[in-house]
Amino acid sequence: MKLAADVIAGLAEHLEQAQLQGHDVVKITDAHPEMDWEDAYAIQDTIRARKLARGDRVVGLKAGLTSHAKMKQMGVESPVFGFLSESFAVADGGVITHAELIHPKVEPEIAFVLKHELRGPGCHIGAVLAATDFVIPAIEVIDSRYRDFKFDLKSVVADNTSSARFVVGSSAVPAEGLDLRTAGVVMEINGEVRAIGAGAAVLGHPAASVAMLANFLAERGEAIPAGTLILTGGVTEAVAVKPGDHVQLRVQGIGSCAVRFA
Ligand code: 0L1
Ligand code: MG
Image (tube, rainbow, N blue to C red):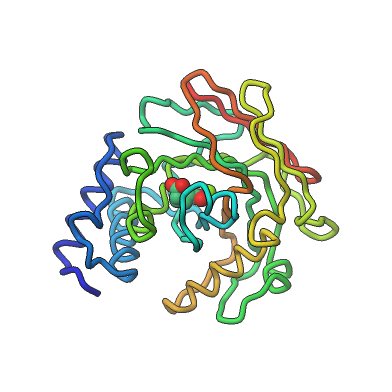
């Protein structure tokens, strides 16, 4: 690690305050170019600890930048991982207050819920499918705290991978019998189709994203606990939303979910 403990604590507070107050900041590597990956995840962990100390709960995990469309959109080359807090959960069909966020975008995702713990290293798609309880459609709302979504990967990791809100569908479907690679994904905003894709856009198979997360956590001596909800990453580019927008996601063979921005 390159940063001192008090600097990590200060950066976590800086980023979390930006999230809570809905204002943007410049990417933190501008002032701390020496920051390494361990520092970045330590800042994210400190944000997580701050939320837990206030009575929030971690209800899931997420992988981001797992599709070529997203990597190209953001000009980066590898996935990143973050956590989902209970305070970011929005009911299917619910309403998000746009003014609480900075510059939200929506991503169509396929989420997994595990019935068994998943532990790397060596985790693979087969192990993920065997450990999966069900899959469920999800709309992730990302809201980078960085001005104009301009960042580098370490700054994004520190900012909990832009996590801001998420919605999961009301129909949960067992993964058996589904071909998640060819499952079609259609996201509409105000009834207009804005993003189309298929599950294979996420690392060839969305379960590969879960395996990658398990293998990443193994390097930290951690596993994905049974019962965890995992967002596997946007199937398409993220789409900016404005107040009044109604977002609907349909995933072939799995179901749908929706959210409105007020
Ligand atoms: O969930 C995601 O794919 C977002 C990762 C963070 C980068 C971004 O804000 O687009
Ligand atoms: Mg995402």
